Image 1 (spheres, rainbow, N blue to C red):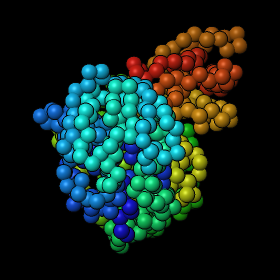
Image 2: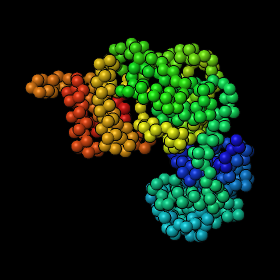
Image 3: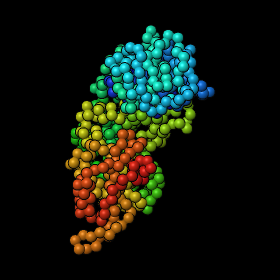
Image 4: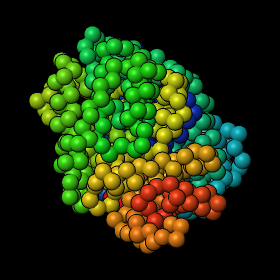
Length: 514
């Protein structure tokens, strides 16, 4: 299929670049983030109808300041420069930029001085969010000032003839009043974009693309039961049906009922060819006596690859490996300024399969953000429990049993965690938090059962709120709910004498204990 009409977000290293792209997607317009060195010819070939220059930490005066292809200004499409972007436009289009005497950081007031399509329908004064040390002090030829802030006479500028705009503030952050309306004006009034980026349209296009890429070949997918792999499986099955084989590895570190739930969902509901690798004894044998969390993770990762590779031999020949790679994974694997030290992470969903397997990748979700993946899952008929499932670590309960992993410890943890899950679901709190889970602690404490002394293990309850797992705060659950959870665990789970609540935030703690 032809490329959708695209708004190109040129990334100059801003912490808000992904937020800009997401705001545009929220307006049902397709956006794509491009490295700042992307040639203008590439943008033209990919049906770009508007360009946004992101902010960034650099100064245009720096020796290694990131610069775009100057031909971007000759594409004949509207350009919007945000923060560093407005300074770039001033610098490259014969204006003048200078160090500001007063660095603007935080909230400011934008005063709109002249009517403009960029601010159509907005009040004359807006609270905006600033984050810059340089500022534009001389307008490039053809530009006029349309807005000012306390320290910037050219906080918003336009060249109406060429449809070039520059703003010194960040409309993408929630601190900016009606910032989304600024982007909507740029998209619909200036660029003439259409609201045609919907998940229904994405599914239709993805199905066609998968069929074109795969042909009649076999595709395999490591199915964890999490949101990303589940949506990828459902989308691939819609596209190629019986050509897809999923492998679910039971590593003995799953939650209570996990294996049965995944098998029932995919074999019976979606009729997907699902192979189950029953490998719990192998994992637990290799983990015996291991207490260091990093060693646990490495052992689990290596063993998973061996099990997966063995499963492929029983399936037969396959040409493609499917992964639930998301757009943030793609973005985070690209270094700004070609500096490897600035890569956030190198993406490998399956932990790096051996090269000898020679499988080509199919990544049907690589254009999507997490919220879009959930919407696709819902449209494909996945139940709410899958689409909105809380994150679960790759090593499973292996990193929720602190200390040595044993069958007995895992049994205790599974039962306690199942009670927490039941009560969170029954109360409706499951859908309000980022994560809720139990942790087995290698500590014994004295308790009383009836009239008898009960010297048994301690379980910690961890419930956190977060947007992206980068930071998190512990959730203030109602006391009566906490009491019910604690009472049920100590009464129903043999081997537990005490329940404690983890009230640590991230940072300084992490969400998971190991």
